[in-house]
Length: 199
Image 1 (cartoon, rainbow, N blue to C red):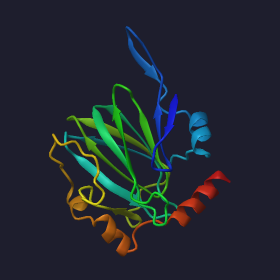
Image 2: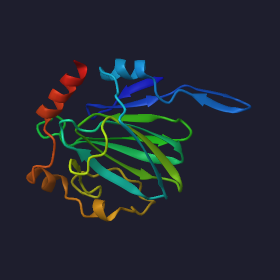
Image 3: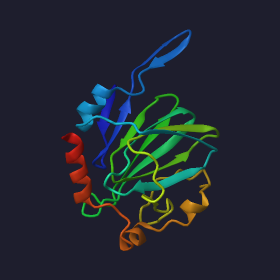
Image 4: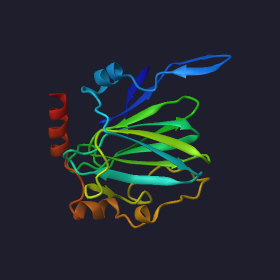
C-alpha cells in the first residue's frame, strides 16, 4: 500500500495494490499496521457510514468538536468523487489550506482525515458510493458545517457539474463566520487529542 501525507497536516492518502485476474480484483482497502506506521496511532472504528450520491452532489464541509472529534477513513467502492481536506484548526500554521484526492473504483484510493479537519466531497458520477470508517459515533450536538461554496475557501470543485447541496449545507456559515461564532476546533485541542491517541 502506498501512503502519501497531503499538504494539509493530519491528512493522508492510501493507495492499495490491486491483484487482478480473469475473476476480478482483490485488494486490501485498509491495513492497520500500515495505517498506524503512517499516522502514529491505531484507528478505532466506532461507526461505518455509507452514502450513495448522484453526480454533482456535495457533502460537507463537515467537522466535529475536539475533543474528541471524529476522524474519517474514506474510500469509494463505486463511482468517483473528489474528496477535500480543509485545515480549519484555529492557530494552525496551515489554517485555511486545502488539498484534494480523487477517490474512485479504479485506483481504489482512500483518504484519512484526522480529528479537527474539515471534510467535503463532490460525486463525479451517478450512484457514487462513499464508505467512511469513523473514529467516534455520530453526535448531532457536536457536529458542525461550513458552506462548501465559500469563495474564501476556493474549494476545487469541477466546473462541469452543478453543485447539489442539502438544506443544512446550503445554510452553513462561511469559514470566517464559523470562526467568529467559536465553532472551529483549535490547533492546541487537536494536538492534545493527537498526543492522547499516540499515548
